[in-house]
Each structure stands twice: as C-alpha cells, then as structure tokens.
Image (cartoon, rainbow, N blue to C red):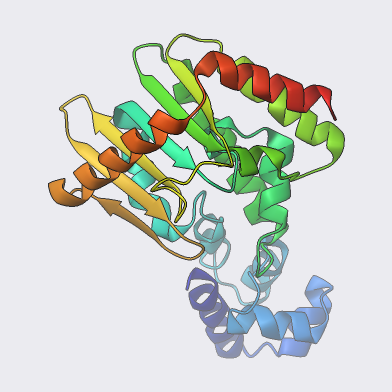
Length: 260
C-alpha cells in the first residue's frame, strides 16, 4: 500500500507541475514502463526517481520524504505481534518440522530461504529480512532466559544451500547448543507425534503470561487464550518425550556434518 500511495502522489505532483511521464523518465534515465509501474504501485518508487521528480515538480522535499516510508518491513506483516513478544520472553520452547528455526539459522541459510520466497522478494527486502533475522538471535546470549528447540530430523537432512553452507549450519547448531540455557534436541523421523501437522513456538514472559504462535505460508497466529496455549504446551511435552537427549542430539548432528 505504501508503494501505491507514493506512486499516486508522484503522479499527482507530476501532473500538477505539467511534467509528462516521458519527461520524467528521460530525466531519471528510466524507461517509461518502469515509471508507469512505479506510479501504479506495482514497483517500489526508487529514491533516484523521487529525487528527480521532486526537483522537476518543485515539490520541496515532499516526494523525497516518502523514501523513509518505503523501506521494506523487517518481518512479514502476519508475524508482527509475535516479534513484539519474542524479546520479552524468559522461556521460549519451539518445535520445527521442516526448517531450521530462525533463531538458529546462519546468514547463508537465511538468505537461501528468503531467495526461494514466492512471489520473489526484491533485493532490499531480502537484505532487510536477513539482517532482522540475524539481529533477533542476540536474545540467545541472555543467560537468564531459557531456550528449548525441538527440530525434526527431516529439517536437518534437508539441504537449504550448498553442501558447505549446510555443513556450516549444522556446525552452528552444535555451537549454539553449548550454553547451559539452550537445549537443541532432534526428533527422530521414525516418530509419530502431535507435531507432524506443523511447527509452533511457546513463550512465557517475566510476568508469567503464556503465548503460543503458529505460522503457515501466508498467515500467523499468536494465541493468548489459556485453552489453546495449554494445548500446545501439552503437545510440546509429548514431542519432547520422543526426542533424543541434548547429548544424543549433538552426536547425531555432528555425524551428519561429518558425512557432508
């Protein structure tokens, strides 16, 4: 919507100033279809185009000022509520069936996953989300918090990047599991458990508020209702019973890395 609004303002200022689309495209060194797409909001108006249009239309900074509001979101809109609570959690427990949890991803794997997004993300959005994902990982260094990651064997076997990148990711998991406040446990693929239908994250705050988060391909839900939250805590407990111990998990991950 910010692209559409900015593009519409760009068009209105251009028409008010009597500047044709052809004149703007030539001055900014863009083809006319690119300018048309930016005005229609199908493409993000570039800073260069806004600067040229601002000068041509004598907008006195009104168009250039829009650039600040065109920066890509750090996280998908449906995950915003979860991202507000994650830094506040003193206990975070999760189960992941298909992916390496975002808090444990290396930069290469995070970038690989974001580059595989469909529809494709523009380069600015990819860079912003990679940076945001890595920045989230700072909470792992807080030893007064407790982290428990249950990761399905399938997620560890799936190669998200090149062989060296995948090996680096596995080694990163081993390093991440060394602090005493972080447990990483592998759930063997042979197990049948309540988590096979999808991943989820459980949070508990310092005020002992408990939340649960589930995410799909295009939606995410943060639950606060005790009935729903308790149900997911129970599911996590049942999956945990079938997981390898932290020590067994470290040996399993180490063996996978050695075989690459």
